[in-house]
Length: 114
Image (cartoon, rainbow, N blue to C red; front, side, top):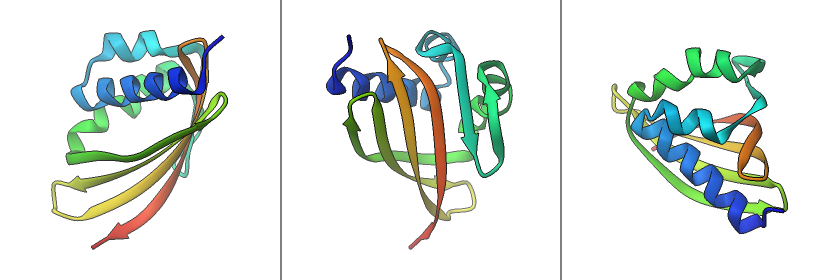
């Protein structure tokens, strides 16, 4: 059984894999039943996320994971990022983690920050 600390580390590793575009690591960290939801994506599966969302890391000039915390299997993260046009944004995510794999991610788009 994973601890909250283990679950936070799993989400941190997935974020690093995304930032570094390490598809092999991302695939290992995503469960077969993985689902991703955002204002632009409605419960897409792992393959759709790898195809449409994973390559989007190149849109970010800079990304910073500013906060990370867990309540059991649910890991919350807040991150700031800068786009190529120089604008700064902030999002939050809730990830459901079991036994070292991410089963679900819900993204909540934040606003532009100055």
